[in-house]
Amino acid sequence: MDISNYLYNQMEKGLQKLVSSNKETEQKNATRIVKDEEATLTFVVWGDPQISCISPLRSARVYSAVKDLKNADNLDALVLCGDICEYGAKCEYKFVKRLIDEAGEGVKRIFAIPGNHDVRLRNYKKQLKRFQGFVKSLDKGDIDLGDSYYHVRDLNGCRFIMMGTDRSTFEAAYINDCQLEKLKEDILSAPEGKPIFVFNHQTLKRTNGLPKTFLGKGKWRGSVGMESEKLKKVLSVRKNVFFITGHLHYCTSEYTYEDCGNFKALSVPTVGVINHGAFKDMTQGYVISVYDDKVVMRSRIFGEGRYAPNSVSNSYIEVLL
Image (cartoon, rainbow, N blue to C red; front, side):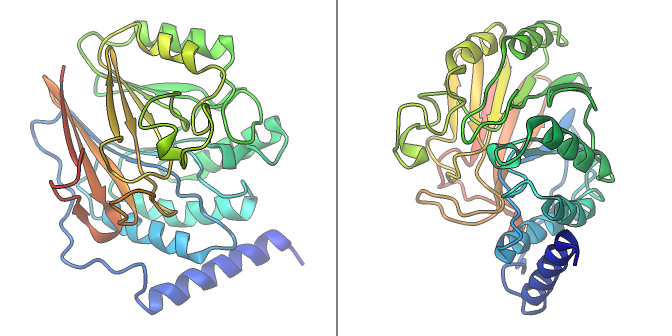
């Protein structure tokens, strides 16, 4: 018996059972995501789908979120901000493709970066190839097939920089000096007057409410780790840098957004697993729009096809450029 195919089939059966019973997948009074004609770029960021071969509920939540994107107004991109899968297994990535390809009908391209769950159980080089193969297999997938997770794209004049650990780690990330130097060069060479979006799974130490937002444990847990201060200096070399992360599994809240001077830190809630904090709605993420003079970030409950209410802190964020 091929265990990978067996687990994939079990995941499919679990999802179909939930879909047929209308649990975790129903959207009531949904409103379509429509691009503002004045925006030069509009994209979506999801944190931590964390699809698991033993948890059909996560697949159902992502499935419901995908339905929202499928009906979207041809958005410029979807970014999956790490922890795509629970164990980094072949069957899990195959199932994510089965889910995410439907979202491609409403977006032009799909980016993904690795989280600690994607890399921590296997040989680094082998898992890198598996991850790259997964992203390339997506109908709208976009990634470089190099010797690292790091890659760069310019969309409508805005620079997108995708980061990833340089070795297998259990929870933090190891960002070597070579990647930090590339990051610095790519930030400094980005188009003038436009925002620069840097995506990494883990956030920086002592930002976005850490350590409270990572269950209040440890001085470095929930963050990049040892390279946090080095990374912070690189992110500060130029204005209008947006450092966008996942990992914390914390809801839209007062900790979601932090102005760190030259760069702004946005910690995106999870679209798959449970969010901690007061605003516990599932399938949270952000819709981000770029204008000539500002960036607008709106929290959305994708599984329900609606934006988070204005009463929730940082449900609407506007940053002047």
